[in-house]
Image 1: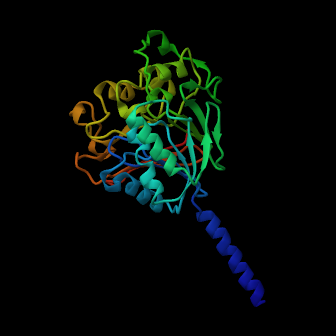
Image 2: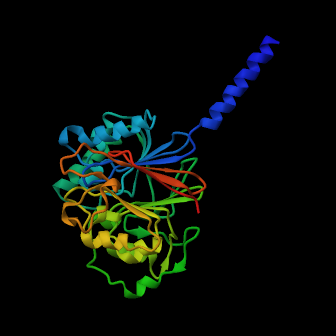
Length: 338
């Protein structure tokens, strides 16, 4: 009888534990002062970090990433995806790898830029991943994570050839969209990914630039619509044409800008005017935006230029519902499933 009672109690505890288990995909937009460091953590604690911020600053960005990872209950990062080889994205990788375990490095292949600065970045990256696994992604390739589907839509200057599920519709904004001068830099080679978690959809295109973005959604939008959109290139006006932002029709946009980097008024207005947009959240108050092209204080993680490095966090359910939390103010807003 006592054995049966204990067994029943253990079963009850097990069911309670399952019921209270984490069910959300959590996305941490870590403040690396105008670079990128976006950490995705699945319900089963599988993790993907997109970029690792800047080098130097006494390991500031690595420390902020590690703090976010530990807050999420991680003891390692399963996948580190490098969008492209610029200092504000790949510069902090070696410092991070020296302090926190990384399972697999993911990138678009070799750095295509030349010169001493580019060679130094490449050497630092290669030292960081010397003892880890390495995965090169092309458009259409996927990161082998279990709870979430992560598909490359741009890589090394190439773009997704077909359409994602929900994509393929004609984009009426393409007719009036003009191109800029061709971009020969690593920005145009950014490894961009489309994330699906049940009905929830999120896109991160790194620093993909204007012409490549237009090619991705013109004449037809190959990606479809999203719930959360990370503004390309930190909200700089060499990226983010209205033709892509409005075609993606995000419910929420996150701008990972710095106080004096990104958040340009032109790019800000392209996002803010997107049909169906419910909110734009910013990692920093943009000095260049003044009062006119910054959102309200509750939707900005860092108001001061010299800040404590607060971030934003999205928690998404498989039914498509999600919430956004401002880690500075503690303000959260929920967005119901559609």
